[in-house]
Length: 267
Length: 267
Image (cartoon, rainbow over all chains, first blue to last red; front, side, top):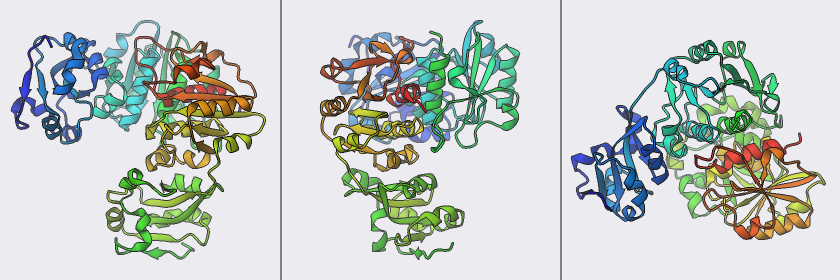
Protein backbone atom coordinates (compact mmCIF):
# COMPACT_ATOMS: atom_id res chain seq x y z
CA UNK A 1 0.00 0.00 0.00
CA UNK A 2 0.98 3.62 -0.43
CA UNK A 3 0.65 4.49 3.23
CA UNK A 4 2.83 3.83 6.21
CA UNK A 5 1.46 1.37 8.66
CA UNK A 6 2.47 0.26 12.11
CA UNK A 7 3.22 -3.42 12.65
CA UNK A 8 1.88 -4.79 15.93
CA UNK A 9 3.71 -7.89 17.17
CA UNK A 10 2.99 -7.74 20.89
CA UNK A 11 -0.65 -8.27 21.96
CA UNK A 12 0.14 -6.07 25.00
CA UNK A 13 1.18 -3.12 22.84
CA UNK A 14 -0.50 -0.05 24.44
CA UNK A 15 -1.17 1.51 21.04
CA UNK A 16 -3.88 -1.04 20.33
CA UNK A 17 -5.42 -0.97 23.84
CA UNK A 18 -8.76 0.20 22.41
CA UNK A 19 -9.09 -3.11 20.54
CA UNK A 20 -8.51 -5.25 23.63
CA UNK A 21 -11.37 -7.55 24.67
CA UNK A 22 -13.83 -5.73 22.45
CA UNK A 23 -16.60 -8.19 23.27
CA UNK A 24 -16.62 -7.20 26.91
CA UNK A 25 -16.11 -3.53 26.14
CA UNK A 26 -19.71 -3.23 24.95
CA UNK A 27 -20.79 -4.18 28.43
CA UNK A 28 -18.46 -2.10 30.57
CA UNK A 29 -18.74 1.18 28.70
CA UNK A 30 -17.09 2.50 25.62
CA UNK A 31 -16.33 6.11 26.58
CA UNK A 32 -17.94 7.57 23.48
CA UNK A 33 -16.07 5.26 21.13
CA UNK A 34 -17.30 2.46 18.92
CA UNK A 35 -15.83 -0.51 17.06
CA UNK A 36 -16.44 -0.77 13.32
CA UNK A 37 -15.85 -4.17 11.67
CA UNK A 38 -15.52 -5.18 8.04
CA UNK A 39 -14.69 -3.41 4.80
CA UNK A 40 -18.26 -2.28 4.05
CA UNK A 41 -18.70 -0.69 7.48
CA UNK A 42 -15.30 1.04 7.31
CA UNK A 43 -16.25 2.46 3.92
CA UNK A 44 -19.35 4.01 5.52
CA UNK A 45 -17.27 5.31 8.44
CA UNK A 46 -14.80 7.11 6.18
CA UNK A 47 -17.56 8.55 3.98
CA UNK A 48 -19.36 10.16 6.92
CA UNK A 49 -18.42 13.57 8.31
CA UNK A 50 -20.39 12.99 11.53
CA UNK A 51 -18.07 10.16 12.50
CA UNK A 52 -14.33 10.17 13.00
CA UNK A 53 -11.85 7.30 13.13
CA UNK A 54 -9.17 7.12 15.81
CA UNK A 55 -7.30 4.22 14.24
CA UNK A 56 -7.61 1.23 11.91
CA UNK A 57 -6.41 -2.31 12.65
CA UNK A 58 -6.00 -4.81 9.80
CA UNK A 59 -4.95 -8.43 9.60
CA UNK A 60 -1.83 -8.52 7.45
CA UNK A 61 -3.38 -10.74 4.76
CA UNK A 62 -6.22 -8.25 4.26
CA UNK A 63 -4.02 -5.25 3.50
CA UNK A 64 -3.57 -6.01 -0.21
CA UNK A 65 -7.30 -6.03 -0.94
CA UNK A 66 -7.81 -2.67 0.74
CA UNK A 67 -6.30 -0.16 -1.70
CA UNK A 68 -9.51 1.76 -2.28
CA UNK A 69 -10.41 1.89 1.41
CA UNK A 70 -6.89 2.84 2.49
CA UNK A 71 -7.00 5.80 0.13
CA UNK A 72 -9.95 7.21 2.10
CA UNK A 73 -8.25 7.06 5.50
CA UNK A 74 -6.98 10.50 6.61
CA UNK A 75 -3.20 10.72 6.96
CA UNK A 76 -3.39 11.38 10.73
CA UNK A 77 -5.29 8.15 11.45
CA UNK A 78 -2.79 5.41 12.36
CA UNK A 79 -3.16 2.07 10.56
CA UNK A 80 -2.08 -0.90 12.66
CA UNK A 81 -1.37 -4.27 11.08
CA UNK A 82 -1.01 -7.57 12.87
CA UNK A 83 -0.98 -11.30 12.19
CA UNK A 84 -4.21 -13.25 12.63
CA UNK A 85 -2.88 -14.80 15.83
CA UNK A 86 -1.94 -11.46 17.37
CA UNK A 87 -5.27 -9.95 16.36
CA UNK A 88 -7.27 -12.82 17.87
CA UNK A 89 -5.33 -12.56 21.12
CA UNK A 90 -6.00 -8.85 21.36
CA UNK A 91 -9.69 -9.04 20.53
CA UNK A 92 -10.23 -12.06 22.78
CA UNK A 93 -11.92 -14.19 20.09
CA UNK A 94 -11.44 -15.12 16.45
CA UNK A 95 -11.63 -11.98 14.33
CA UNK A 96 -13.24 -13.48 11.29
CA UNK A 97 -12.96 -10.45 9.07
CA UNK A 98 -9.66 -8.96 10.21
CA UNK A 99 -10.77 -5.40 9.43
CA UNK A 100 -11.42 -3.12 12.41
CA UNK A 101 -11.51 0.53 13.30
CA UNK A 102 -12.14 2.52 16.46
CA UNK A 103 -14.48 5.41 15.77
CA UNK A 104 -15.99 8.34 17.60
CA UNK A 105 -19.07 10.44 17.05
CA UNK A 106 -18.19 13.99 16.08
CA UNK A 107 -21.62 15.39 16.91
CA UNK A 108 -24.22 14.21 19.42
CA UNK A 109 -27.29 16.33 18.80
CA UNK A 110 -30.24 16.33 21.16
CA UNK A 111 -33.56 15.02 19.83
CA UNK A 112 -34.76 18.60 19.35
CA UNK A 113 -31.57 19.73 17.61
CA UNK A 114 -31.72 16.77 15.25
CA UNK A 115 -35.38 17.32 14.39
CA UNK A 116 -34.76 21.06 13.88
CA UNK A 117 -32.12 20.22 11.28
CA UNK A 118 -34.52 18.28 9.03
CA UNK A 119 -35.98 19.54 5.75
CA UNK A 120 -39.71 20.35 5.28
CA UNK A 121 -40.30 16.92 3.78
CA UNK A 122 -38.91 14.30 6.09
CA UNK A 123 -39.34 10.69 7.13
CA UNK A 124 -38.30 9.89 10.71
CA UNK A 125 -38.24 6.64 12.70
CA UNK A 126 -38.97 6.90 16.44
CA UNK A 127 -38.07 3.99 18.72
CA UNK A 128 -39.32 3.17 22.22
CA UNK A 129 -37.65 0.40 24.23
CA UNK A 130 -35.81 -1.31 21.36
CA UNK A 131 -33.19 -2.98 23.58
CA UNK A 132 -32.11 -5.79 21.26
CA UNK A 133 -28.93 -5.03 19.27
CA UNK A 134 -29.96 -7.18 16.31
CA UNK A 135 -33.27 -5.40 15.96
CA UNK A 136 -31.59 -2.02 16.37
CA UNK A 137 -29.07 -2.82 13.63
CA UNK A 138 -31.74 -4.19 11.27
CA UNK A 139 -33.97 -1.15 11.75
CA UNK A 140 -31.06 1.15 10.86
CA UNK A 141 -30.30 -0.95 7.77
CA UNK A 142 -33.93 -0.73 6.62
CA UNK A 143 -34.00 2.99 7.41
CA UNK A 144 -30.95 3.60 5.23
CA UNK A 145 -32.45 1.55 2.38
CA UNK A 146 -35.64 3.61 2.41
CA UNK A 147 -34.13 7.06 2.85
CA UNK A 148 -35.07 7.78 6.46
CA UNK A 149 -33.77 11.25 7.41
CA UNK A 150 -33.26 10.63 11.13
CA UNK A 151 -33.92 8.15 13.92
CA UNK A 152 -34.89 9.38 17.40
CA UNK A 153 -35.14 6.99 20.34
CA UNK A 154 -35.78 6.89 24.05
CA UNK A 155 -33.25 5.94 26.72
CA UNK A 156 -34.89 2.51 26.95
CA UNK A 157 -33.52 1.74 23.50
CA UNK A 158 -29.98 0.41 23.22
CA UNK A 159 -27.14 2.47 21.80
CA UNK A 160 -26.99 1.94 18.00
CA UNK A 161 -23.20 2.20 18.26
CA UNK A 162 -22.86 -1.16 20.00
CA UNK A 163 -20.50 -3.32 17.97
CA UNK A 164 -23.16 -5.84 17.01
CA UNK A 165 -25.76 -3.23 16.10
CA UNK A 166 -23.26 -1.53 13.79
CA UNK A 167 -22.35 -4.85 12.17
CA UNK A 168 -25.97 -5.94 11.64
CA UNK A 169 -26.76 -2.49 10.23
CA UNK A 170 -23.95 -2.94 7.65
CA UNK A 171 -22.78 0.51 8.69
CA UNK A 172 -26.18 2.24 8.57
CA UNK A 173 -25.83 3.02 12.29
CA UNK A 174 -22.92 5.28 11.26
CA UNK A 175 -24.86 6.81 8.39
CA UNK A 176 -28.42 7.62 9.47
CA UNK A 177 -28.36 10.59 11.91
CA UNK A 178 -29.77 9.68 15.31
CA UNK A 179 -30.41 11.00 18.81
CA UNK A 180 -31.12 8.99 21.96
CA UNK A 181 -32.57 10.80 24.93
CA UNK A 182 -35.39 10.86 27.47
CA UNK A 183 -38.78 9.21 27.23
CA UNK A 184 -40.90 8.07 24.30
CA UNK A 185 -43.48 10.63 25.40
CA UNK A 186 -40.99 13.51 25.13
CA UNK A 187 -39.94 12.29 21.68
CA UNK A 188 -43.55 12.20 20.48
CA UNK A 189 -44.05 15.73 21.86
CA UNK A 190 -40.98 16.96 20.01
CA UNK A 191 -42.17 15.36 16.76
CA UNK A 192 -45.72 16.73 17.03
CA UNK A 193 -44.46 20.22 17.85
CA UNK A 194 -42.64 20.13 14.50
CA UNK A 195 -45.63 19.07 12.44
CA UNK A 196 -44.88 15.36 12.20
CA UNK A 197 -47.71 12.90 11.69
CA UNK A 198 -46.74 10.17 14.17
CA UNK A 199 -47.84 6.69 13.06
CA UNK A 200 -47.63 4.19 15.92
CA UNK A 201 -47.19 0.61 14.74
CA UNK A 202 -49.28 -1.89 16.67
CA UNK A 203 -50.80 -5.31 15.94
CA UNK A 204 -54.12 -3.70 16.98
CA UNK A 205 -53.62 -0.55 14.88
CA UNK A 206 -56.74 1.21 13.58
CA UNK A 207 -55.40 1.86 10.07
CA UNK A 208 -53.96 -0.73 7.67
CA UNK A 209 -50.40 0.18 6.62
CA UNK A 210 -51.42 -0.49 3.00
CA UNK A 211 -53.96 2.37 3.21
CA UNK A 212 -51.64 4.98 4.74
CA UNK A 213 -51.15 8.12 2.65
CA UNK A 214 -47.98 9.71 4.02
CA UNK A 215 -47.89 13.50 4.37
CA UNK A 216 -44.82 15.74 4.13
CA UNK A 217 -43.54 14.99 7.59
CA UNK A 218 -44.09 11.44 8.80
CA UNK A 219 -42.67 9.64 11.83
CA UNK A 220 -43.00 5.88 12.27
CA UNK A 221 -43.05 4.92 15.97
CA UNK A 222 -41.96 1.37 16.83
CA UNK A 223 -41.98 -0.29 20.25
CA UNK A 224 -40.45 -3.52 21.48
CA UNK A 225 -42.16 -6.81 20.69
CA UNK A 226 -43.97 -8.10 23.74
CA UNK A 227 -44.57 -4.94 25.76
CA UNK A 228 -45.35 -2.83 22.66
CA UNK A 229 -45.97 0.88 22.98
CA UNK A 230 -47.37 2.42 26.19
CA UNK A 231 -51.22 2.75 25.97
CA UNK A 232 -51.22 6.44 27.01
CA UNK A 233 -48.99 7.16 24.02
CA UNK A 234 -51.08 5.17 21.55
CA UNK A 235 -54.20 7.11 22.55
CA UNK A 236 -52.66 10.34 21.22
CA UNK A 237 -51.55 8.91 17.89
CA UNK A 238 -52.71 7.35 14.64
CA UNK A 239 -52.20 3.62 15.17
CA UNK A 240 -51.24 1.51 12.17
CA UNK A 241 -51.23 -2.26 11.72
CA UNK A 242 -49.76 -4.66 9.18
CA UNK A 243 -52.44 -7.16 8.17
CA UNK A 244 -51.32 -10.75 8.62
CA UNK A 245 -52.64 -14.11 9.73
CA UNK A 246 -54.18 -14.02 13.17
CA UNK A 247 -53.07 -17.53 14.17
CA UNK A 248 -49.40 -16.70 14.47
CA UNK A 249 -47.26 -14.55 16.72
CA UNK A 250 -46.78 -11.09 15.26
CA UNK A 251 -43.87 -10.03 13.05
CA UNK A 252 -40.46 -9.19 14.38
CA UNK A 253 -40.15 -5.41 14.88
CA UNK A 254 -37.38 -5.13 12.28
CA UNK A 255 -39.50 -6.98 9.68
CA UNK A 256 -42.40 -4.66 10.50
CA UNK A 257 -40.11 -1.66 9.99
CA UNK A 258 -39.09 -3.00 6.54
CA UNK A 259 -42.72 -3.30 5.40
CA UNK A 260 -43.74 0.06 6.82
CA UNK A 261 -40.72 2.02 5.55
CA UNK A 262 -41.07 0.47 2.08
CA UNK A 263 -44.63 1.85 2.11
CA UNK A 264 -43.67 5.28 3.49
CA UNK A 265 -40.68 5.86 1.22
CA UNK A 266 -41.35 8.34 -1.53
CA UNK A 267 -38.03 7.97 -3.40
CA UNK B 1 -49.17 -29.57 38.03
CA UNK B 2 -51.54 -32.42 37.32
CA UNK B 3 -48.94 -34.59 35.64
CA UNK B 4 -46.13 -36.71 36.94
CA UNK B 5 -42.69 -35.41 36.22
CA UNK B 6 -39.21 -36.78 36.66
CA UNK B 7 -36.80 -34.86 38.86
CA UNK B 8 -33.26 -34.73 37.46
CA UNK B 9 -30.57 -34.09 40.07
CA UNK B 10 -27.50 -35.54 38.41
CA UNK B 11 -26.23 -33.72 35.29
CA UNK B 12 -24.88 -37.09 34.11
CA UNK B 13 -28.32 -38.73 34.20
CA UNK B 14 -28.58 -40.73 30.94
CA UNK B 15 -32.26 -39.88 30.54
CA UNK B 16 -31.43 -36.28 29.65
CA UNK B 17 -28.48 -37.16 27.37
CA UNK B 18 -30.24 -35.53 24.41
CA UNK B 19 -30.00 -32.15 26.16
CA UNK B 20 -26.28 -32.38 26.78
CA UNK B 21 -24.08 -29.72 25.15
CA UNK B 22 -26.86 -28.62 22.85
CA UNK B 23 -24.80 -25.79 21.45
CA UNK B 24 -22.26 -28.17 19.95
CA UNK B 25 -24.90 -30.66 18.89
CA UNK B 26 -25.97 -28.37 16.05
CA UNK B 27 -22.51 -28.74 14.60
CA UNK B 28 -21.91 -32.46 14.97
CA UNK B 29 -25.26 -33.76 13.77
CA UNK B 30 -28.59 -34.10 15.41
CA UNK B 31 -29.76 -37.49 14.12
CA UNK B 32 -33.11 -36.24 12.94
CA UNK B 33 -33.89 -34.54 16.24
CA UNK B 34 -34.21 -30.88 17.10
CA UNK B 35 -34.18 -28.72 20.22
CA UNK B 36 -37.16 -26.47 20.87
CA UNK B 37 -36.74 -23.63 23.38
CA UNK B 38 -39.25 -21.43 25.13
CA UNK B 39 -42.94 -21.59 25.89
CA UNK B 40 -44.11 -20.11 22.58
CA UNK B 41 -42.08 -22.59 20.52
CA UNK B 42 -43.25 -25.55 22.63
CA UNK B 43 -46.84 -24.45 22.11
CA UNK B 44 -46.26 -24.62 18.34
CA UNK B 45 -44.56 -28.01 18.70
CA UNK B 46 -47.49 -29.56 20.54
CA UNK B 47 -50.05 -28.04 18.17
CA UNK B 48 -48.42 -29.58 15.10
CA UNK B 49 -49.10 -33.11 13.91
CA UNK B 50 -46.03 -33.15 11.64
CA UNK B 51 -43.75 -32.87 14.65
CA UNK B 52 -43.41 -35.12 17.65
CA UNK B 53 -41.83 -34.51 21.04
CA UNK B 54 -39.54 -37.07 22.68
CA UNK B 55 -39.33 -35.30 26.00
CA UNK B 56 -39.65 -31.96 27.75
CA UNK B 57 -37.14 -30.47 30.19
CA UNK B 58 -38.19 -27.60 32.49
CA UNK B 59 -36.42 -25.54 35.10
CA UNK B 60 -38.25 -26.13 38.35
CA UNK B 61 -39.27 -22.48 38.84
CA UNK B 62 -40.98 -22.50 35.43
CA UNK B 63 -43.31 -25.43 36.10
CA UNK B 64 -46.01 -23.41 37.86
CA UNK B 65 -46.56 -21.05 34.93
CA UNK B 66 -46.93 -23.92 32.46
CA UNK B 67 -50.38 -25.35 33.25
CA UNK B 68 -51.81 -24.68 29.81
CA UNK B 69 -48.78 -26.01 27.99
CA UNK B 70 -48.48 -29.09 30.20
CA UNK B 71 -52.07 -30.01 29.38
CA UNK B 72 -51.08 -30.32 25.71
CA UNK B 73 -48.20 -32.73 26.29
CA UNK B 74 -49.15 -36.34 25.46
CA UNK B 75 -49.06 -38.69 28.45
CA UNK B 76 -46.25 -40.80 26.95
CA UNK B 77 -43.86 -37.85 26.65
CA UNK B 78 -41.67 -37.68 29.77
CA UNK B 79 -41.35 -34.31 31.49
CA UNK B 80 -38.01 -33.80 33.21
CA UNK B 81 -37.54 -31.07 35.78
CA UNK B 82 -34.24 -29.78 37.15
CA UNK B 83 -32.81 -26.87 39.09
CA UNK B 84 -31.31 -23.97 37.15
CA UNK B 85 -27.81 -25.08 38.11
CA UNK B 86 -28.34 -28.65 36.91
CA UNK B 87 -29.91 -27.46 33.69
CA UNK B 88 -27.07 -25.05 32.91
CA UNK B 89 -24.51 -27.80 33.56
CA UNK B 90 -26.29 -30.15 31.19
CA UNK B 91 -26.82 -27.64 28.40
CA UNK B 92 -23.27 -26.29 28.72
CA UNK B 93 -24.35 -22.64 29.01
CA UNK B 94 -26.89 -20.52 30.85
CA UNK B 95 -30.37 -21.65 29.81
CA UNK B 96 -32.06 -18.30 29.99
CA UNK B 97 -35.57 -19.57 29.44
CA UNK B 98 -35.52 -22.91 31.22
CA UNK B 99 -38.07 -24.45 28.86
CA UNK B 100 -36.78 -27.10 26.44
CA UNK B 101 -38.00 -30.03 24.41
CA UNK B 102 -36.41 -32.57 22.09
CA UNK B 103 -38.51 -33.00 18.97
CA UNK B 104 -38.50 -35.10 15.82
CA UNK B 105 -40.06 -34.65 12.40
CA UNK B 106 -42.82 -37.16 11.76
CA UNK B 107 -42.82 -36.65 7.99
CA UNK B 108 -39.99 -35.62 5.67
CA UNK B 109 -41.62 -35.15 2.27
CA UNK B 110 -39.57 -34.68 -0.87
CA UNK B 111 -39.90 -31.35 -2.69
CA UNK B 112 -42.23 -33.00 -5.24
CA UNK B 113 -44.37 -34.68 -2.58
CA UNK B 114 -44.73 -31.44 -0.68
CA UNK B 115 -45.69 -29.44 -3.78
CA UNK B 116 -48.16 -32.16 -4.84
CA UNK B 117 -49.94 -31.79 -1.51
CA UNK B 118 -50.72 -28.08 -2.01
CA UNK B 119 -54.13 -26.63 -2.92
CA UNK B 120 -54.88 -24.96 -6.27
CA UNK B 121 -54.27 -21.55 -4.79
CA UNK B 122 -50.94 -21.55 -3.04
CA UNK B 123 -48.10 -19.27 -1.99
CA UNK B 124 -44.68 -20.92 -1.76
CA UNK B 125 -41.26 -19.63 -0.75
CA UNK B 126 -38.23 -21.16 -2.53
CA UNK B 127 -34.75 -20.66 -1.05
CA UNK B 128 -31.34 -21.02 -2.69
CA UNK B 129 -28.19 -20.93 -0.57
CA UNK B 130 -29.70 -19.39 2.58
CA UNK B 131 -27.00 -20.67 4.93
CA UNK B 132 -27.44 -18.22 7.80
CA UNK B 133 -29.59 -19.53 10.68
CA UNK B 134 -30.88 -16.09 11.63
CA UNK B 135 -32.07 -15.39 8.11
CA UNK B 136 -33.61 -18.85 7.83
CA UNK B 137 -35.53 -18.39 11.08
CA UNK B 138 -36.69 -14.89 10.14
CA UNK B 139 -37.90 -16.04 6.71
CA UNK B 140 -39.96 -18.80 8.34
CA UNK B 141 -41.42 -16.31 10.81
CA UNK B 142 -42.42 -13.97 7.98
CA UNK B 143 -43.79 -16.90 5.98
CA UNK B 144 -46.01 -17.96 8.87
CA UNK B 145 -47.27 -14.40 9.36
CA UNK B 146 -48.29 -14.12 5.70
CA UNK B 147 -49.82 -17.55 5.24
CA UNK B 148 -47.16 -19.24 3.11
CA UNK B 149 -48.28 -22.81 2.35
CA UNK B 150 -44.83 -24.39 2.01
CA UNK B 151 -41.12 -23.58 1.84
CA UNK B 152 -38.85 -25.54 -0.51
CA UNK B 153 -35.08 -25.10 -0.41
CA UNK B 154 -31.88 -26.40 -1.95
CA UNK B 155 -29.17 -28.34 -0.12
CA UNK B 156 -27.10 -25.15 0.00
CA UNK B 157 -29.61 -23.78 2.48
CA UNK B 158 -29.20 -24.62 6.17
CA UNK B 159 -31.56 -26.94 8.00
CA UNK B 160 -34.48 -24.88 9.44
CA UNK B 161 -34.46 -27.22 12.43
CA UNK B 162 -31.20 -25.85 13.80
CA UNK B 163 -31.78 -24.68 17.34
CA UNK B 164 -31.16 -21.03 16.54
CA UNK B 165 -33.29 -21.03 13.40
CA UNK B 166 -36.21 -22.50 15.35
CA UNK B 167 -35.79 -19.92 18.09
CA UNK B 168 -35.57 -16.95 15.71
CA UNK B 169 -38.62 -18.28 13.83
CA UNK B 170 -40.60 -18.25 17.13
CA UNK B 171 -41.61 -21.81 16.20
CA UNK B 172 -42.59 -21.14 12.58
CA UNK B 173 -39.89 -23.62 11.48
CA UNK B 174 -42.05 -26.29 13.16
CA UNK B 175 -45.24 -24.97 11.61
CA UNK B 176 -44.70 -24.12 7.95
CA UNK B 177 -44.25 -27.36 5.95
CA UNK B 178 -40.86 -27.54 4.23
CA UNK B 179 -38.63 -29.76 2.10
CA UNK B 180 -34.89 -29.41 1.59
CA UNK B 181 -33.35 -31.29 -1.30
CA UNK B 182 -31.20 -30.99 -4.41
CA UNK B 183 -30.41 -27.89 -6.44
CA UNK B 184 -32.22 -24.58 -6.87
CA UNK B 185 -32.62 -25.51 -10.55
CA UNK B 186 -34.47 -28.75 -9.70
CA UNK B 187 -36.73 -26.85 -7.31
CA UNK B 188 -37.61 -24.28 -9.95
CA UNK B 189 -38.35 -27.14 -12.41
CA UNK B 190 -40.67 -28.80 -9.88
CA UNK B 191 -42.48 -25.51 -9.24
CA UNK B 192 -42.92 -24.68 -12.92
CA UNK B 193 -44.17 -28.19 -13.72
CA UNK B 194 -46.96 -27.53 -11.22
CA UNK B 195 -48.06 -24.21 -12.66
CA UNK B 196 -46.25 -21.90 -10.25
CA UNK B 197 -45.28 -18.40 -11.33
CA UNK B 198 -41.74 -18.19 -9.95
CA UNK B 199 -40.77 -14.64 -8.96
CA UNK B 200 -37.02 -14.34 -8.42
CA UNK B 201 -36.07 -11.51 -6.04
CA UNK B 202 -33.05 -9.55 -7.18
CA UNK B 203 -31.79 -5.99 -6.65
CA UNK B 204 -31.71 -5.79 -10.49
CA UNK B 205 -35.19 -7.30 -10.95
CA UNK B 206 -37.17 -6.23 -14.03
CA UNK B 207 -40.49 -5.78 -12.22
CA UNK B 208 -41.13 -3.62 -9.14
CA UNK B 209 -42.58 -5.71 -6.30
CA UNK B 210 -45.24 -2.99 -5.81
CA UNK B 211 -46.56 -3.73 -9.35
CA UNK B 212 -46.74 -7.52 -9.04
CA UNK B 213 -50.21 -9.00 -9.52
CA UNK B 214 -49.99 -12.47 -7.96
CA UNK B 215 -51.77 -15.34 -9.75
CA UNK B 216 -53.25 -18.43 -8.12
CA UNK B 217 -49.93 -20.21 -7.66
CA UNK B 218 -46.99 -18.00 -6.82
CA UNK B 219 -43.52 -18.92 -5.64
CA UNK B 220 -41.09 -16.31 -4.29
CA UNK B 221 -37.47 -17.34 -4.92
CA UNK B 222 -34.84 -15.85 -2.58
CA UNK B 223 -31.06 -16.27 -2.78
CA UNK B 224 -28.32 -15.40 -0.34
CA UNK B 225 -27.17 -11.80 -0.02
CA UNK B 226 -23.89 -11.30 -1.79
CA UNK B 227 -23.88 -14.12 -4.33
CA UNK B 228 -27.61 -13.76 -5.09
CA UNK B 229 -29.32 -16.19 -7.45
CA UNK B 230 -27.42 -18.00 -10.23
CA UNK B 231 -27.70 -16.05 -13.55
CA UNK B 232 -28.84 -19.11 -15.55
CA UNK B 233 -31.78 -19.43 -13.18
CA UNK B 234 -32.72 -15.76 -13.33
CA UNK B 235 -32.88 -15.90 -17.14
CA UNK B 236 -35.78 -18.36 -16.99
CA UNK B 237 -37.83 -16.42 -14.43
CA UNK B 238 -39.69 -13.19 -13.79
CA UNK B 239 -37.24 -11.10 -11.77
CA UNK B 240 -38.64 -8.76 -9.16
CA UNK B 241 -36.96 -5.90 -7.26
CA UNK B 242 -37.82 -3.84 -4.21
CA UNK B 243 -37.24 -0.18 -5.01
CA UNK B 244 -34.95 1.53 -2.54
CA UNK B 245 -32.17 4.09 -2.35
CA UNK B 246 -29.28 3.27 -4.64
CA UNK B 247 -26.57 4.68 -2.38
CA UNK B 248 -26.82 1.96 0.23
CA UNK B 249 -26.14 -1.75 0.42
CA UNK B 250 -29.25 -3.78 -0.39
CA UNK B 251 -31.76 -5.06 2.16
CA UNK B 252 -31.18 -8.13 4.26
CA UNK B 253 -32.82 -11.18 2.63
CA UNK B 254 -35.22 -11.66 5.56
CA UNK B 255 -36.34 -8.02 5.37
CA UNK B 256 -36.86 -8.44 1.61
CA UNK B 257 -38.97 -11.54 2.28
CA UNK B 258 -41.17 -9.56 4.71
CA UNK B 259 -41.87 -6.85 2.14
CA UNK B 260 -42.49 -9.32 -0.69
CA UNK B 261 -44.69 -11.72 1.30
CA UNK B 262 -46.74 -8.84 2.68
CA UNK B 263 -47.38 -7.89 -0.95
CA UNK B 264 -48.13 -11.45 -2.13
CA UNK B 265 -50.40 -12.42 0.76
CA UNK B 266 -54.06 -12.52 -0.19
CA UNK B 267 -55.45 -13.17 3.32
